[in-house]
Image (cartoon, rainbow, N blue to C red):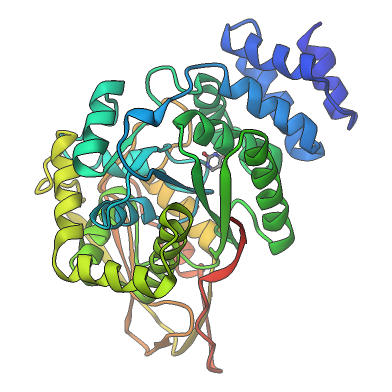
Length: 425
Ligand code: URA
C-alpha cells in the first residue's frame, strides 16, 4: 500500500477501505507520510467527502492512536460539551463552572484555534500561569474536588487528531463533515463521557455555513456515537454573528467572568441556558424549569463564579492577571441605521490576523488582542456611535476592512435567535 494511490483514489471520488484509512493515519503518525502528502489527502477529503463507514473507520483509527480514558474514578454524573467552533465562542468557560456548581462533573479536553475560529485552550492560556497539561491523576482529582477541569489534548489522547488538527488549521482543510465528525468524536469518545453535547454552530462564522450541512454533520456524529454506545445530543446554534461581545483570547475570558457576575449579553445567555437545560436533562433527567431555576440560583449566589475561580487556581492560573493589550482603538460608525449583518468569518479572520490565532503551525498567539463589539444584529446605530473597540499590539489595523464586516441598512432588522434546533438525545 502507498499513500500516493490513496490520495489519487480520494481525488477520483472513490471510497477508501478500512485498511487504507488506517495506513494513511498510522503512517502519518510515524512520520512515513509527510505533511504535504497528508495535506493533499485532507484536501481531497474536503472536496470529495467520505461516507459514514469511511468516517467511522477514520474515527476508530484516530481514537485508538492513543489512550482511551476511563472516567469510572470520577464520582457523580459526567457530561461533556464540545463546540464545532465559532467566533467569540467562550461557552466552555461559562458552562463548565455553572454545571459544576449545579452538581455535574465536566471533565473536558479542549482544542486550540482552528482556522478563523478560536480555541478554549488558547483562551485559557491568556490567564497567566494557567496549566493546560495535567497528569491523569491531577485531572481526575480536580474534577472530583471542583467539578470541572479543562485540559489540552495532552499526553497520549488521540495524538492523530492533535497532529491532523494542527495541519488542518493552516491548510484550509477545516470545513469538512467527515473530518470534523471524526476529529470531535474521536476526542469525545477517548475522553470517556457517556453523555456528549455538541454545540453545532451554523452560519457565516461557523465551519458549517448552512442548515443542511449542519444537520448532516449532526447525523454523522450521532451515528458514530451510537457505534461507541455514547449518547450524543446536537444543539444547532446560530453563528451568523459573533457570540456575545468579545472576540480574542484574554477578552473572551473577561467576558466569561462578566457573565458569571450576572452581566450577560442576550445571545450568550440564550445559548448557555439551552446547554445547561440539555445537560441537566440528559445526565440527571431534570426538567427545564428546575434546571433554569437552579442555574439562576447558582449564578446569583456567586457559586458559579467561585467554581470558575477554583478551577483557574487549581490549574495554576492567576485570575487577576489576564493578558489584554494596552493599545486600543475605538471605531465609530459613519452611518446611521440598523445593523443588518456581520461578516463573522471575515471578522474572525481579521482577529486571527491581529494575532488572536495562527497563520502557520509555528505562530505564537498574541493573547491580548481582539475586538469588543458594541452592536449586535438588529441594533440601531446612530452616526458617530461606537461600533467596536480593537485591542492590538504589533500589527497594522485596517479600519476599512473591519468596517466592511458591518452592514448597516435603513429599515429595521429583526434580532437573531441563537437556538435553531436540538437533534438526538
Ligand atoms: N472542533 C474539533 O475538535 N475538530 C474539528 O474538526 C472542528 C471543531
